[in-house]
Image 1: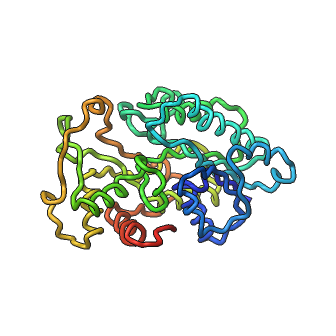
Image 2 (image 1 turned 135 degrees about the vertical axis):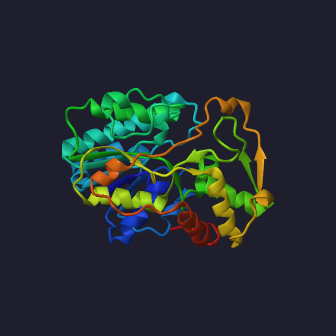
Image 3 (image 1 turned 90 degrees about the vertical axis):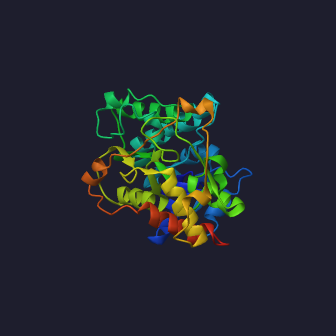
Amino acid sequence: MIIVTGGAGMIGSAFIWKLNEMGEKNILIVDKLRNEEKWLNIRKREYADWVDRDNLKEWLSIEENAKKITAVIHMGACSATTETDGDYLMDNNYGYSKFLWNFCVERSLKYIYASSAATYGMGELGYNDEVAPKELQKLRPLNKYGYSKKIFDDWVFKQEKKPKQWNGLKFFNVYGPQEYHKGRMASMVFHTFNQFKEDGYVKLFKSHKEGFKDGEQLRDFVYVKDVVDIIYFMLTHDVDSGIFNIGTGKARSFLDLSMATMKAASKNPNLEQDKVVELIPMPKDLRGRYQYFTEAKVEKLKAIGYTKEMTSLEDGVKDYVENYLSQEDSYL
């Protein structure tokens, strides 16, 4: 049985979709549904059992349950970069990750967990996942969420006892189906689609940094279907343990992403930019801590044998918009 924490969230539920596509149904979903609509993300899925996030420790303390587990895919976390409760973040993102690490150590299991590109902060030290642990420790995240992810990465490297295989995945800007419940934290594709549908245009920030044109701040946007393909590869192959960037390795602008979204939504490949893009000043409180560029170095991922081509921004956005956002039944 494979544990997938955060199994009703965006990446977790998309990974369960991938497992089902590959014929795997012996899955334990761990999450909390609360009053959110993310239950819809697992409505079509087949799985063996469900355990509330707060009850997993007790569930695993029963030997009959624990011995069933063959791997842990830990995607569960508070992923809101705006979360201000540091104690909550440390308990949820740091303490819980340590508990699952230790369980996998005791049982000699594979442990694949979600880190984050937010650990890189402003990117002043680059976006290199091949550096030594002491270099990773020098990273300075911009928010408490990023810090809660970084401190677990740092803790991992200090451990003498390790799981059978462990992979910490630094996700860059993931977009795609199953993010409808995320509100402000949903991708720019999701927000552009809905703003364009409602207003007929999209608002983008002007640039306040030399070398970047208005609306052309750069991010590494990665399609969620590529993300789950990588996780599945790591689950089903014996690969080197360590931290891995999960991105395309190619930064693209918010303008590129927005135009691709609006062209797919309108089915008009000749949409004129000046008619559908409004440039607005960036709020002053963001200007000093806004990332103008992120781009994953992905050579380390390729070195372990993952050779599948990443989906281009245009193709990923087109699939997401046409086959999900524009459809009445828009779930995987």
